[in-house]
Image 1 (cartoon, rainbow, N blue to C red):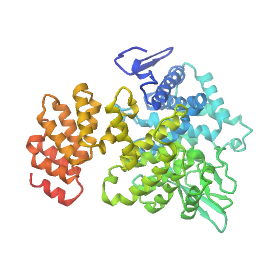
Image 2: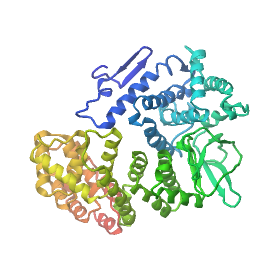
Image 3: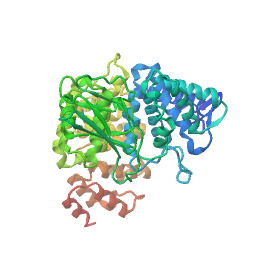
Image 4: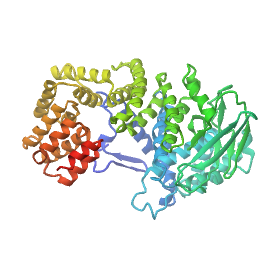
Length: 564
């Protein structure tokens, strides 16, 4: 560790150099997830001693051979060492879910086309999608074969520059020796044949699962997600599934393989739900027929919902949201699905839901969102009643992360009790900062959401605190007040105190106020009436008008702007 190292860091064979600030965790100052971030970084760089140094990709187009493995094993190893952290579950609900939403036009194949990536090879394809595909391969061949193949790869390719075919050959060799697994003896199952469809094609498949309830037959087909993508992208897909009559989510090795241009047909008990892609091991989405999806939702809304694996609960939420965005699933079905979260106490499905809320946070501002907003606030309230607002010393890290996210998102979409609690914490802190310290990871919740419902007196105390400390975090939160009179006064202070606020701070805060408050008629009227006096010098009139129009939501408000 080197203090003030000019770059983030660099891994070399036998020595890893990093800026000290990147690898230090201070329990008294840092949020819980910072410890996990530091551990992941250290594990990633240590993994590069093998993937990247002991063996290295033969060319930049195969950069994923080192970065993909390092990104996968950093989570895999931490999952084995610190089981309470649930690193692989976080990887699925974080990295994989996020990547599936991006991989519809913003990402390319794992094997990079250097003509397109000459100056941007270190992207999501190698750090996010590649480890997701490696996780899929690991589950498809099983732990013994995967481990034996990697060991063979190191033994035969040490000190060499390697290609994907070298890797596939070594795992194929391990697979051919695996006589204990019946499907492994099928020589038509070739690692290279399968994996080339995953590393050389962009996007990912959707498994369409259709059940004939009269003949007890499940039919599975595939298509490329997102209709704008050509339909000729097809994959070799490992298919795992379980059924309500005998739910077993533990064995993630494939029951069957779906080949390109094939319909997979399986005889199965259709008396209850059937769930495909156990623990979301395959990098894909699953689209169920109406009856099966209704059965799954009904089961999730029962007391037995935990019999469905937590990663599949999260996947069902994320897939359903994606299909709503694609107009392939009715919003009312999604509303019925998320109702089950009133029972959910595990962080992983909630983490998926929090990401969904993030993507729709601007929608909640609109009056038309009333029913959805009320519905989500209702299920969030049940979660808050369970996790509470106060941290306990004995809480697991995952519980702390769940609580921190729950109070943030509840306040974000307007949970009254959540804001009231934040306001109490803020008042206590301002009255006696030494006794009522606010941890760094709770400062935004306390300052911003506390000020949201605070009176002018409390807001003035925060302004005085900023004047004494010049703490930029305080300045950023001062515009969180929801009282339009307070915001109008803030605009006046910003414009009239040029020595207290730099041009840069004035510009940043003014634009933030436009984003958060221009839709309020009282604030909008004040801005328009005092436009020339309060507009920052660094922002042009045309840009300011554009920002105002972007943040108002009625024709009447837009017509007011026309008079400038």
